[in-house]
Structure formats: structure tokens, C-alpha cells
Length: 188
Ligand SMILES: C[S@@+](CC[C@H](N)C(=O)[O-])C[C@H]1O[C@@H](n2cnc3c(N)ncnc32)[C@H](O)[C@@H]1O
Image (cartoon, rainbow, N blue to C red):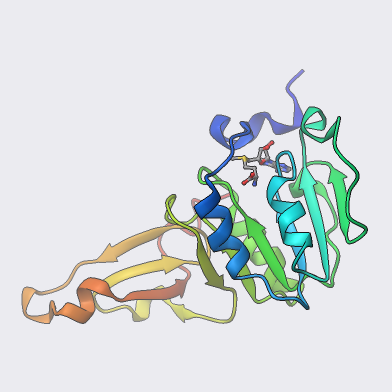
């Protein structure tokens, strides 16, 4: 029988830590009034630090072995051992955290957070590199991008090509926050 997590990417299911600079950047986006949902929290090393700043942190991790032999938890840290995809999330979340470079589930996670009224997702999953603060507000439709880089709510990033005369410094560096990109329907 296949396990529940078998349809996740093999890297996504694996536990790996990030460096302190990555955690520091992610922590810099957390505010004292935040209710944080840390999706794929690993051994809670980030969630514990986040709980030192935020009002409350919900940490979801599917691997029970990472949650055993833990020191006492702060009172404002709730730990849930489950698959985040199949869990009802609290409707008080103000900031999602997704530190998981290989995540294939950005679209459902971002959409669910947005539906709950959450406006911020702190993640390294979209570009697969550094941590960014992703705004979950309404964004422009991909079709409106004439030329240049885009980053979609679904997690995909790309470049819309255009005529050479339209290329400028702004086009090179600016990233349009979009939804409904061509990959949206292919993403789970
Ligand atoms: C790359 S590790 C990062 C851990 C943690 N975010 C950190 O930065 O220290 C990703 C973690 O996400 C967990 N994970 C992946 N998909 C999950 C899901 N759907 N539900 C719960 N945990 C998940 C994995 O078990 C793994 O521990």
C-alpha cells in the first residue's frame, strides 16, 4: 500500500535544515501580532524562533520522528503531526511560512491561505532560492504582462518574451506578481 505522502516530491518529503541566514530573513517578516502557520516545520527549529516573536505559531510536520525527544515547547506554539494538505487550518492565520525549496504544493497552500484571509506567505519555494515575502492579495492576470519576469500565485516563475525594442532596465529587474499563468492548470 502506498503511503499518504507518496505523491509528494521525494525532496519535498525529505527533511533538511536551512542556514541561519535563511531563518533570519524569514523571521524578519514576522510581526508580533501574527498568527503563523509553519507548513512542513521539520524539527521545529524555525517554529520555536518564530514563537519568540509572533502571537501564536501553528507548526505542521508529517514525520513523527522529528517531533519526538523535544525540549519543552513555549505555550504559544501548537504542534500538529499531520499532512498539511489534509488538515483543516485555523482561520486566524495572518502569515504562512513555507520553508521548503522543493515544494510542489505552492498553489494549493497559497490559495488556501488566501481563502482564509491570510495576506502573506514567507517562502523559499517559489524561486527555489532565497526567502521572499509573497503577497497573497489579488494580483494581475498573467495575460496583462506584455514583457518581462513574472511570479505566479501557483508557484511558477518565468519570463514573457517580447520585441527587443521593449527591453529596458525595468523589464530586466522588475517581477510582475500574477495569477492565471499558463502553468496554473498543470500545477497540483
Ligand atoms: C526541507 S524540510 C524544512 C523543515 C523546516 N521548514 C525548516 O526550515 O527547518 C521540509 C519538511 O516539510 C515536511 N513536509 C513536506 N510536505 C509536508 C506536508 N504536506 N505536511 C506536513 N509536512 C510536510 C517534511 O517532512 C520535512 O520535514
